[in-house]
Length: 171
Image 1 (cartoon, one colour):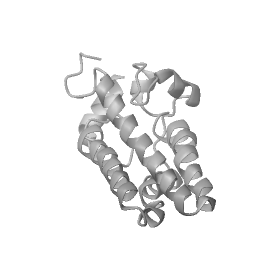
Image 2 (cartoon, one colour):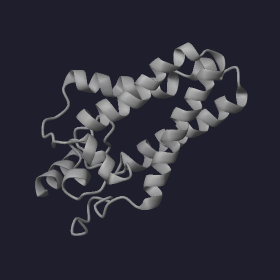
Image 3 (cartoon, helix red, strand yellow):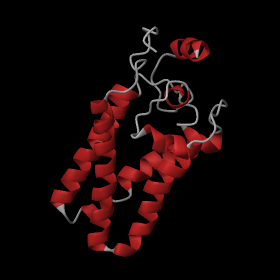
Image 4 (spheres, rainbow, N blue to C red):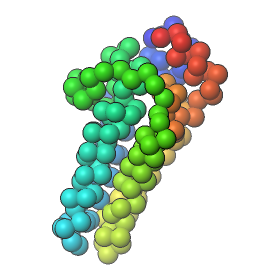
């Protein structure tokens, strides 16, 4: 991958990048779930469904990861260990996101940080920790990873389209 100078993540993800992305995202789920459990446990299953199935079952299995060349071409993944992603994603997808897929994608990434807020408001410490973790993850994505993304079909991708097209063709 190092022959491609234009993609800043062409050499794969560094361990610290993986730790940062995973720690902040897992913290969002754990803190959000804890906040809901402390107030009214009955609202926890819908959040866990959105968080766990939304990411593992929809985003990773059907939307972003099946298109990502890091996983399929270079045997690397922002999620670690990469073998787990390979178990979830069996087949590479080459078609762009449909309208329904884009709607699902946005819904998942909007609901994960907003759903638990109502229950977290009563606990300022958890709310603060949640907002910090969510900010870390989303700012890390938008200001770092999305600006270097190789998944041109992803709605959050911020790489110039001409650069994406030329890099995708090279693979």
